[in-house]
Length: 225
Ligand code: NI
Ligand code: MN
Image (tube, rainbow, N blue to C red):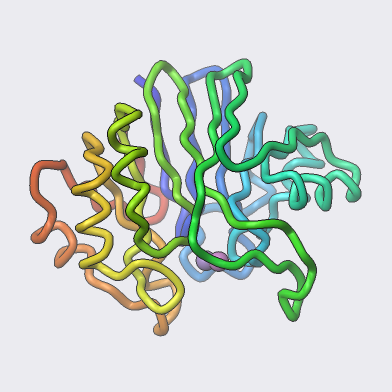
């Protein structure tokens, strides 16, 4: 069984026992971080958008592990200019990798990089990642969007991570609606309580979701899927 480990905020690792993926590797400066960036062993680094709390330590981790960065075309090329291996993709496109498949979805959000978020890194994306024969949905940062219904219809999602922290992303109630659309077998709330601005209650989320198993993970905890 493949396994997902939550490392805090939106940072997740996936493994099938052979390949290790890390998504949105924001660890340094992440008050929730369960591990240090220099402890990460990864073959692939997936980044949903250019904001600092998602790019995080991605370039350093990719360099140290000789890993491949998977991101949208603009963000991937920005990482490539730093000397790391890249696989640029774009929204609606999928690609078969050694571990399985990655497909990029839309996300409703921003994407600037740098101290003033002014460097263009293309549109934000979400990832549908198939590993060990199971599909995980990591939507990055996004508001609720109705195409989640289509994503749910066209994919058997074993595990979805959904932001619930409000202000920059969906709140609890919108994430509950997202679960209705996506119909994942398991859902893990994330992108909350990292800072006071995005405080939210995962227990409220768990109480409101119906028909899907809600798994509340503390940073460092894992779930099989
Ligand atoms: Ni963001
Ligand atoms: Mn964010």
